[in-house]
Length: 112
Length: 114
Image (cartoon, rainbow over all chains, first blue to last red; front, side, top):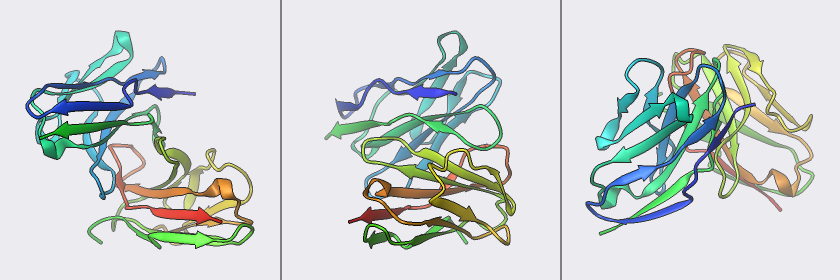
């Protein structure tokens, strides 16, 4: 069975700092990869997704993620965070139609 | 509707009681998913419907849990003889087809078993 590891449980940054959140998965076959975000008091929302093609994918609000197949990684990045990026971020992997496996999430706190 | 609707938003029940949690997906979405999220953890898969049928129920923890989607739209997750360990946020999500291009989640039902 596949698993997803998010190594950073809580990240604290100041505004304008650069962000990278780690995500590694264990599965040797073809995967679809996702990042979801949950802002305080809101429901989970899709941030970006990778299926095939260019391994660098861009999502909403200036976020991007890079799929590195050899490292089984799909790290999330943003060059300059804002206070409004404070949220919990979840990485997920899907190996066949239907269900996804989620990581345990990373809480990002951005100090103004 | 405009989004995935889950009711109730909060449910407190006594140990041993029966509960039903409802999910109304986005109109036209054929795939519907139930997940459970405990504090400090990511969503954990329970069951997935394609149309009216359960395509994968491998995540249901035991036979106290059951879900239906009789007309291919609204789904109900049913938990019998609730236990304190069932306390969690139950999330519903839908997608246009069974090909997972990313979910639209509801706001969840917070279940507390006392």
